Length: 122
Image (tube, rainbow, N blue to C red; front, side):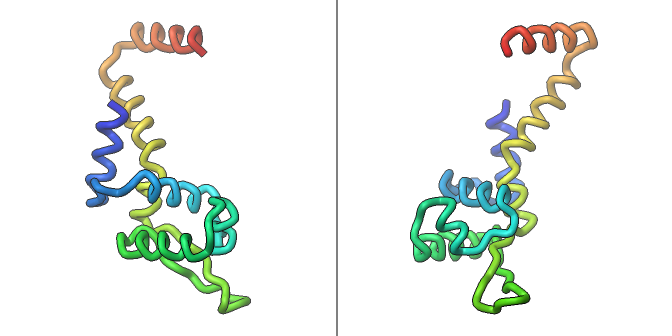
């Protein structure tokens, strides 16, 4: 069910063929906020040329854009577009959709039972 929701989100973004590595980069950018090329290279333990190549690909897919630092024009921040945010957060959004589907399809007694089971498994 989660995979179905995730596929739907990627489909909405017209990116059914995005790679796991690209999704990982988008999630990393999303989690770190103010990220530069150097910082992303450090976080992912990759070279700057590798980061540049990946960001160029993600830019062509309209998932990221470069924003120059107002204080130092040599530095660029990597920002997610709305599309990039949607992809980076797809797993989280898919889980929310699964929960919504469960709540919609279960009655109050079944929801209480599910909560009890989940607490026991935890």
